[in-house]
Image 1 (cartoon, rainbow, N blue to C red):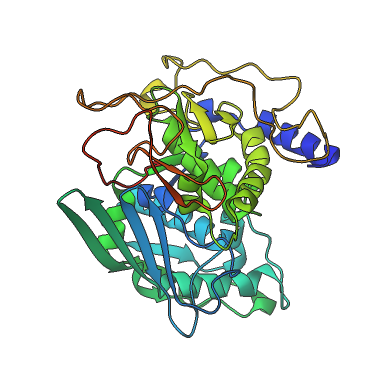
Image 2 (spheres, rainbow, N blue to C red; image 1 turned 90 degrees about the vertical axis):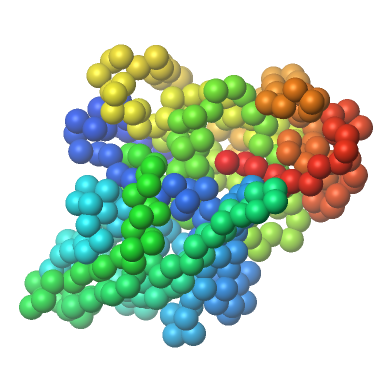
Length: 377
């Protein structure tokens, strides 16, 4: 990351203070399942397909688009979903009013209305249509069983906004969207609180939005350090990357600005994955926002943790020399403690680049061999 951009991100980090979020109206929400599993980052790798799947541990998100609009992808659907979730949580209603002016609603999303082929207006219109016409399926697999539900995002929508030339003029009818009952119930069940300014600062990158949402959700319940393996992260965030090393490089590039905005997150890249240490969520719980929280805010750092000492222009995070990564201990007394070098649930080792199965871990694999799925939630 260039130095001028780095200085800009440091300024943003100072400006975004999550401790007063509830009092100043800066809290927004995202459905928990949309944080644990994500939409496509771009059209790259989709190849015109209208079906998409993303897995995180035992949870699988499947999205099917239409031939007319395709799949929703990029940062715009994520910003729209955050707005929909926030409105649904606050109004407790499936019927949401987007407003009479497209430009006013776009500014709520942190977008500047611009026309033309590559303008924000046309792109947002298309992505909204793709999102509202998509079918979503959520499946959860457990040993010996599972559960799942299929649903539409919206059972009805009406977009009566004016043409791009008149976006500031109010339309005769209000633009509305009615969420399907199942989707409404899914997004209001334990939504993840986020900082609206963080979403606006990171709106230019779908992966940055995903990393920010995932980190603040993960930190909200993380009690001890954990190493999330690169293959597990690739299942959750990757897509269109031929080699695991390419995904790792791209993730670290996008993680740098996220950590400048969310300074409290203690994240360190390691050879085997990302090391997460217990940190305060970016938006503290309501019950702890007035100073009673056990978390203490970290003092401002003279420089962010985003510079590679070997090459300051690299724009990626350098691995921190933290020694042996802390490991999570198993809750089962009959299962050995996790060694930290394999995937935690399967206790099998994988090739660091191809993800190929290298067999059971000689250090901590229990007997008999268990079959499970990696969990990075």
